[in-house]
Image: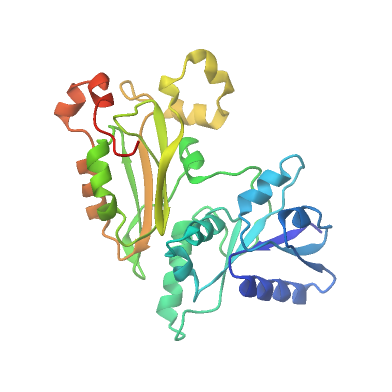
Length: 306
């Protein structure tokens, strides 16, 4: 039997899930790992509890030289996950990554007060955060390689789902656009657009840096920065070295003016106003007059992100 890997930021919840799994199959071994190296050395037919700071993509990256990377289940306690996601330290990013990268998300326990509505709210939130993961049964196969939010988007995969109608208060919305952001207006709007947002992710581009694809990621704190170049700015003789999925995604969605440049941002939260988010971000796009000035003028725009 293959290795089963359980992870998550909350060791007690992960350990309880491991013991519950062993109770259904007492012939399996339980291995609690202090490091990723210990996990990689685990024998078959073992239930492996990963270190609390380990992300599923860490496992996939380390497993890359081998075939059949194991699936990773992230255990999420219903009464603690909101505190983790809203943490303004690196914990927020870690918790978000562990949920998003999981093959299976296992929700345990209930919200404080045994409120069924609030527990269901957490379940909906987890589905919005990781719509690509299994939330009911273990995945049969792990993903072969990491797909970070920006990598996922540039390869043509969804970075979120557009569900603007609240479900137990949880809202998920996706913003798409072609024309670039004005760097100054976007910078001034960041606090407004991330208000009440538990998680946001994706990629975008700035008029002042038209050659660069920028990553957008928040869970407590917002992180923005360059991640790669746009294919439209890359010499054709370098295209053979580009990931095949990204080439295909760009070809399908190529624009005669912008090339493969575009924004693809997802926002998930409780009591979000998706119309407000869309309006704020739309006001940050270049106007028709600014577009008409051309790329050389865009590059001279003051850029507070530098």
